[in-house]
Length: 383
Ligand SMILES: [Zn+2]
Ligand SMILES: [Zn+2]
Image (cartoon, rainbow, N blue to C red; front, side):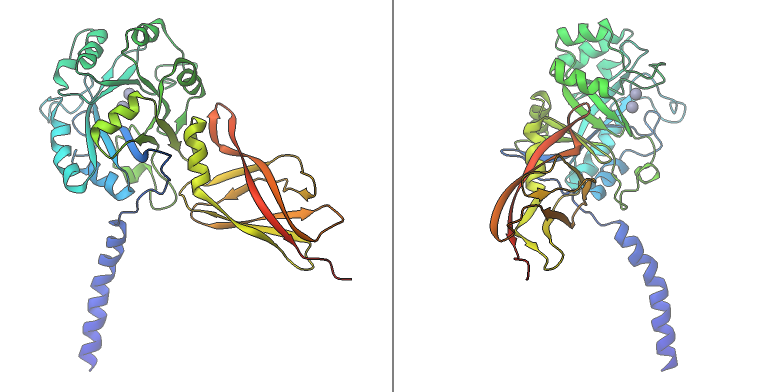
């Protein structure tokens, strides 16, 4: 009898760490709705490995992406900067070749890319969807980008406001960038790199019709920089693709169907941000008035991983709106409290309640505008 308890105790003792470890191995897909006609794919298109200045073997990158619930990654080691070359052969194609089979096993799309790493101007640019990275190893920066362009690559400017290259910390546009743009050799810009948001880059993407991107540019193991299991996530580019394939991701990137998702921020065109918001949020109608309290409570369910911050405008006829920001927490139901201002508080009425979603940016400092249609059934006051 006693021995049985000892055995039970010992097995639990050894099993518990295994169970705890297993929890970290689970995959939780990222919950962001699709937009009309397209699938929303979570992509990180700027990643390093030991084959340039990263600290991770390439086959770990698809596994990190799988655990975080992502769809697509691009391996983009530096062409010019190879600090490990005394230990590893300098072969620009090798990191992709090692990462790709692991991606195939896990159903993570792995794209071949490279980072052309030059002084400003033009700075650092990623070329992705390459057939081979080797032709990008050239003397002149223009020839490297031309070699990528000749392979049909999608080319984007990385971290345009990085203080290492922009000492005044403001992203500056140079004639070299105009030259690339005019020759069809610049297709997008990182509006976010790591945790840094560049409003200038956001503005350029809108003005010059370039694709907005947000990438981790990760060098460390992912969990050293991001607490993925604790409501944190790496910066990612949401790509709105016809289906989940390399060809569709490429088509969507050239067609500028992307949004930037970093921390609490979601940045992009209203055509994408509005359906993501409206498909994430469900209102339970009619709202209920609590007897004696005099206030009406609207139940709002957020089915997505994005927390939305709502700011209400001036009060509307018959209803007083909250002054403070209402946070619609991810995967939760929250209550919006409204106070009736009219004398006649009986029957059922429908109200359109306008607000701004402060963390969904359709331009620098411009939040997405939306409204809720709310049906209120008033409980008559007792005499
Ligand atoms: Zn860089
Ligand atoms: Zn980089």
